[in-house]
Image 1 (cartoon, helix red, strand yellow):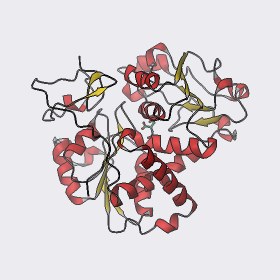
Image 2 (tube, rainbow, N blue to C red; image 1 turned 90 degrees about the vertical axis):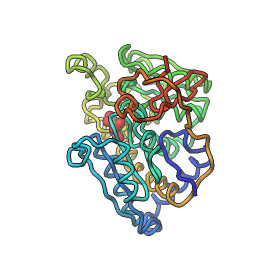
Image 3 (cartoon, rainbow, N blue to C red; image 1 turned 135 degrees about the horizontal axis):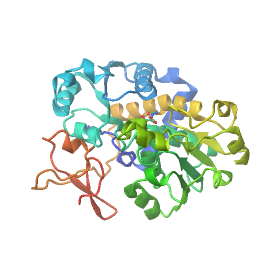
Image 4 (tube, rainbow, N blue to C red; image 1 turned 45 degrees about the vertical axis):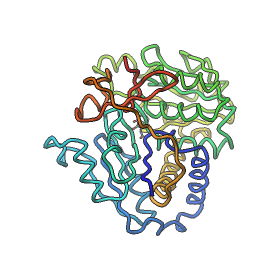
Length: 357
Ligand code: NCD
């Protein structure tokens, strides 16, 4: 059976997405039916960055499937603190386990790990780049509530530059087509160009909107995000961006009665506490769905080879370092082979998707 990893939503086919959704809904209805589905299997969780929901929901997912979990949540307690490379850590850990879940501050780290892994690797967030399992639960929640993933008016608000959940969600939604996107951010925190291109190629209408008030009345979905403090170069730069977008009851009055508010969580100050009690706020439900869709994903990767999708193969280049993104894993783990891919005709780094200049 071929090892399948999930680095990006594009690593599964649309029919596999449908299957994941159906399985997650079945699990949600009766989790007990699945309690021995992965018995005897071990999941390794490698968290190089803080996490509450993602790590715990993966652990809970594996345990509810009858499997066990090993791993670390603080690299300071592992050999990483002694200077071990990602490659060596992965080679060792995947010798102990059947599936590995990795979160890293470096962009492309999960893809890099998959190059050296004998078992499926799941990307649980790589820097500002992608977070595909968050996307699975976002899509599940939207589909459950709205019954569709097309013809929707979707607003994403906050840190569109550094928010990996937004990058993953928009690139996935671009595959469903016919959606309208409202990108609500400051000039400084605008969506990166490579994601923007995916949206326009998909035929979706895209509007840049500086304030929530301007578009909230149009929206079917409002996806709020946290300003990603840890990605800023200085506290001062962060302070300039924080507190600009705050969803409060007055803004909710401008919204449609069936608008859905989502948030990947944790939220800091971008949603007032009183909004939690508004029936349109569905983010706690969204977080719970994360466990069910992760159960479905682990089950799929461990028990089925799945359909063949075009792999993010890339090809070797003869030169030295090729990616100019300082946060790309290829600039930190220097042994990594140079790999490029084409994204809409643009030659890009296969680890972090940045354009090769
Ligand atoms: C998100 C993340 O880590 O990217 N959290 C999560 O996984 N639910 C969002 C965030 O940290 O803002």
